[in-house]
Amino acid sequence: MKPKIFIDGEHGTTGLQIRVRMADRPDVELLSIPEAERRNAAMREDLLNSADVAILCLPDDASKEAVGMLEGNNSVRIIDTSTAHRVAPGWAYGFAEMDSDQPEKIRSARLVANPGCYPTGAIGLIRPLRQAGILPERHPVTVNAVSGYTGGGKQMIAQMEDESHPEHIASPHFLYGLPLKHKHVGEMQTHGLLARAPIFSPSVGRFPQGMIVQVPLYLEDLNDGATLESVHAALTAHYAGQSIVEVVPLATSAAMARVDAVELAGKDTMKLFVFGSTGGEQINLVALLDNLGKGASGAAVQNMDLMLSA
Image 1: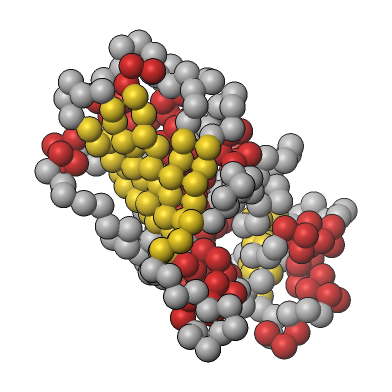
Image 2 (image 1 turned 135 degrees about the vertical axis):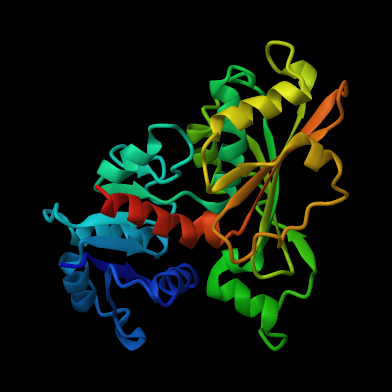
C-alpha cells in the first residue's frame, strides 16, 4: 500500500512547491483538501489523522494547532516547515547533511522540523568548522544574506509583483530584521553549536527564488593557525560523499568574478564556497541555494523520503 501524504497548507508557497516535486511520483498517495475548505478544521483534522506523513506548511501557531490535532495518534509522522519546533526537544532537525548520523535521526524520527532557508546556509558553513575545532565557540559570528522574495510567502510575492498593491514594494533590494531579532537566530545558534547568538542581517532582492548566505571571518581569530586551505579542507571533509551539498574547489572559486543568487533557482542542491587569498587575513564563507529548494520544499521532500525509507 502506498504511503499517504497530506500537505497541510498545500495552497501556500512552500506547499505548492512540494506538490510540484511530488506531482509525478507513483510511489505515494497525496491527500488533498480543496482550497475553499482549507480553513475547515474538521476536514483538516480528518486528513491529518488519515496520513502516514503530514507535512505542515503553516505559520507557527497553526503548525502547533495541527500537531495538537494529532495528539494521541502516534502513527502519523510529521514534517513541520514552520519555525515552531526547530529547537524543540523531541524533534529531529531536518538538515540531513549536518552530521554523519543526521540521516538516521531523521529516518527514525516521528517528528522532524524542517530547517529555515537562511539557517540551512549558515549552519552548513558554521557547524563543520565548530566540529573541526577551527571556529571558537564564542566567536562573534556575523551572517549576511539575501533571499528571493518568495521567501516572504504570498503576501510578499503580491507586494513585489503587483504595482497596484496598497503596500507595493518597488525597491530592487531591501534590508529587514533591523532590530537583530530575526526568528532564525536561535536556530542558527543552536545547530551552529555557538555559545553566542550570531549577528544576522537578512535582506530581500527583486528575484523570485535564490539565496546567498555569507559568513566573513578573520583567520587570526580562528583556532590552530587556520588558513584558507584548512578551512576549505574542513568543509570538504565534512561533506565528502554528499550529493546535495557541494563544496566548490578553491581553484574554481579563485577564478570566479561573482556569485549569482539565482544560479540554483529551481534546484534542491546547495553550493559552498571559501573566498579569499592564500596568505591573506580574511576569508568569506558563502552558501548558495534556492530559498524554496534546499531552503524549504526540496528539504521537506528529502526528509520525507528518508522517513519513508525506514
